[in-house]
Image 1 (tube, rainbow, N blue to C red):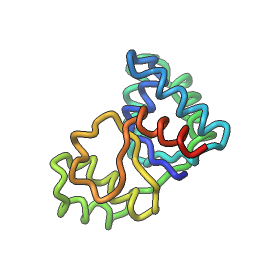
Image 2: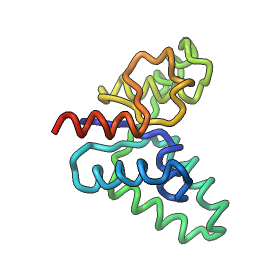
Image 3: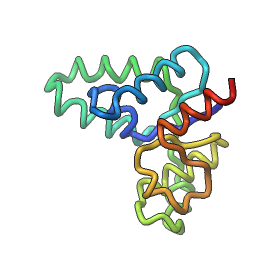
Image 4: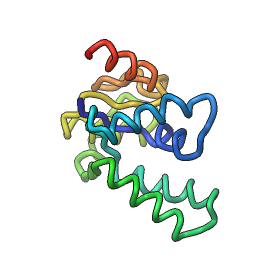
Length: 140
């Protein structure tokens, strides 16, 4: 299964944010064990850098964290067409609309996020971490 991870799920694992940490860490393990194919948008990486650096206050440590992430997750570029199409989207959150366009173009099976309400009108499947874990358990 090809899964595009929203930034919030990555940060839940990296920053051990409760009560979301456990599901996010389980998903990381599934990616690491190649049970699912995990991907991040290039835009997410810049956001993760910024938000992680605010906690580490250390550029080298933050870069190491990103290198570890990139050893697990593939990167999905954001294209000019994604940007244009997102402007036409029914989603009220533009950044989420860009993610949907990238996921659709890359033929991802789903986006995993905690912000399901933002994706109600998404043109692709969107699951919460717990929903994705449940689906994967059923598929075994």
